[in-house]
Length: 91
Image 1 (tube, rainbow, N blue to C red):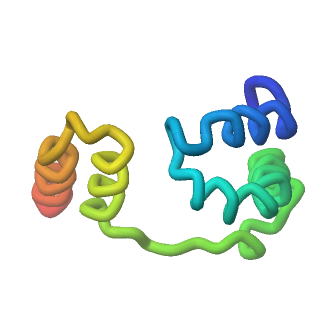
Image 2 (image 1 turned 90 degrees about the vertical axis):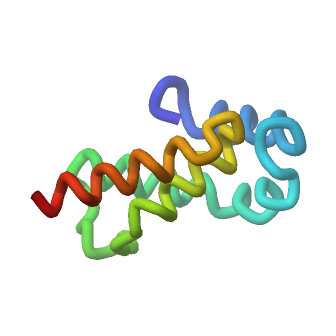
């Protein structure tokens, strides 16, 4: 959306439904996606109050698992990296 515009990004996601992105997820997310992207752009520009956007602490292992769902050839690698980062942060 930042490289082109929101309608272009939404069209690209819809075009790749069932190919790059799970079709059911696309159908559930697409109706709200334009509002979410606009809110993120406003927050990046400093126009929106960051408190208005949901902020949640997410364990690195969950982020790693999501990356591996998108990139299955990295199975195990992302989780090992997250564990390494967690150990390094303690030091």
